[in-house]
Image (cartoon, rainbow over all chains, first blue to last red; front, side, top):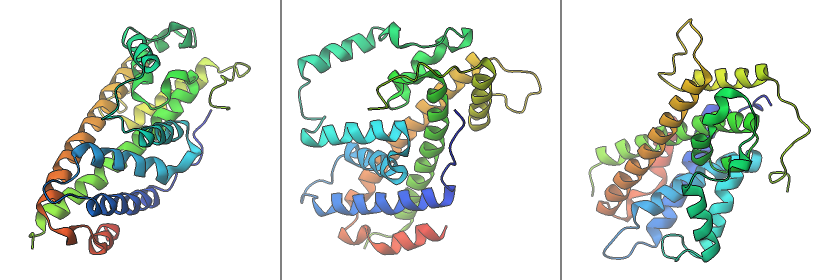
Amino acid sequence: MTAQQSPNPSSLRTRFTYRFLRALKELNKHRSATSWPSYRRVKVAADASMAAAVKSRRAWTRAVLRKIRRGHRSPRWNRPLATRELRRKIRRNHGGNPRKIRGSHGDFGQTNELRKLVPGGESMEISSLLGETAHYIKCLSTQVQVMRDLVDLYSSTPTS
Amino acid sequence: MSSRRTRASKIVTEDELNDLVLKLQALVPNSGSSCTTRVPASKILKETCKYIKRLQGEVEDISERLSQLLASMDNSGVDTDFLRRLLQQ
């Protein structure tokens, strides 16, 4: 599966930037007098903004958007894990489900770790996994660039 | 949902997979893409995992920094001036 036309880097960057700033603005509205929202919320906002900027065109973005939608119903950082999720988590930490590893190609036994890193990677076919990984990396590095620019911008501005 | 079902009927050749791995190699720094000798796919996959972990770590660190910076600014910190400046880059 060859990579579909990848979004023009500058417009992906622009779309992400716009969404992320909007998300920060939203978070800022709800800041309490004493503390700003935790770094976790900033991170989730960034991940969500990137996935939303790409939209559901990619399996990994669909996985991210699903996870976030689930998290909105009951925030992950507050909610105790339900038994089913706990079991799934334990199984994953013990090497995952070997049946899901596709392909008898020699080198590709190494894909387990990759599957855990790429959102939605666990159930992907190997060729899809590689394509999704490439796109995921491009988006992640754009995300990092923009966030770094933001930090530079904010650091260089005198706080009034 | 199509994302749940595996496309078992699609046969991917070794060449196609190698092609995809090469594309990955081009994106990942330090994966030897400038080498003329052929790099084994397992090495490329390892480097890819390292790179992704690094990027995800950077997102965490930058999120932390952003959160601190925004906490120290007043409400005018997040406004459209920044948006315009950023987009001009």
